[in-house]
Length: 597
Image (tube, rainbow, N blue to C red; front, side):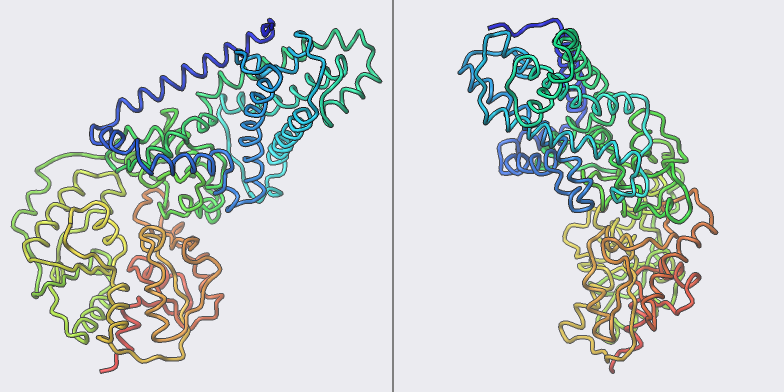
């Protein structure tokens, strides 16, 4: 059997280049992993996590289930290209085995089998394979057509905007757009000259045989296969430097997650897998309020990841993000976008200087006593009504409380982390941890979601229960330790970004409000809730821009017809109060007024 023709050279060269490039990248990235991560890989590679990883690869890398959930049309486009191409390869391999048995066939023999069939005297065509391969080719071509159409009419695909590409993206994309039309033409010409094939290539081949002179068909036959092979080569060579590297990066990323590896604000090596796993599908663009409310179109996560990948990330792009998590909630690859923002900022802004932290030594402005601790945080300290209300609630429940910062204290450290000052944040974390341990706290309550998140994610507080004040109040009401009266007021609850998307706390605040009144939901709520705009994470937009974001968000809350806007974050409370025509109160303030003594 002969499975060589000159036109297969570009394809073979492209395959070799792609394999070498992928292997090189993987080895470098894996080699840079910390020892602890390598230990996790060794300990978990033979585990249930590996089986789960295989299933997730099928579900997300081939079928793109998460994209389907966000945008069915876009999901079908991605799945038809990824899963359709995969099946073309798999069924094509099975086809060669069906015709030739277990005879060894080189890779190009499988890929260009239709070309080599007549050369090797195979004249009997199996209709099952012919029809099946044509059906799969049609599915892939449908995906290609949708990709073309998305570029022209993105709104038809449910997207207001699509991504902007770099040079290698354009090269790879152009090649991908024409690979399968080229295959259709080459296989149809084969059908025109040698017969056979299925409903698609056979029909097109028969039509070509009727209208094109035989000599012309013979003349353009080999060039058509050259075009197909060359397009494959171009795509393979461009892929490692383009967004399509996500195809071979998302797969190991899935397994690394299943093997319990996690990115941090300090770690860099794991980040390569996440950065290059971005397909630049553009799903993260529409949820971004900077784009929707302010017309800022160059800082969204897709562009942040692109710039970081190509080492052209500016501090302005790294810092111009609310880090509200709306894009991360929609990301079909599950990339930890906020963590990547954090360690990008740390690389550019972190200024270690031990002398700056001497004032912390021996500092203790706490008051009260008890195993229950209350950490107000900086923003709650600027909203004294919340502090007073929490004291009323604690007193009504009969709790002895230790107040960590009622007379002034040290920030939790998260605002510094958000700005990239990780060393300064670490010093504050060490101080607060020592303070909590010193006073023997077993339950720590905070009214600030920002504080709660950093306590849970970045502190070492094993043995201390960490609760948001809405969780604690809900527990008091549920156990009968706090009695409140129910009224007729309606409350539109705004989910704070750090509490909702950040910590997954949605139901407890609503249960508390339901105990004192009626809860009404705005258009965007829970995981899809809008940001108030006053995020400490963004150091680029100004006060007027923050206000515009808040005004759009509060319009939705007011549209519910509520009596009072309720929130559970002091920062959101301030933002809503200055943007809304309706009164806004923290849940603690609402509950304190409803206490039955």
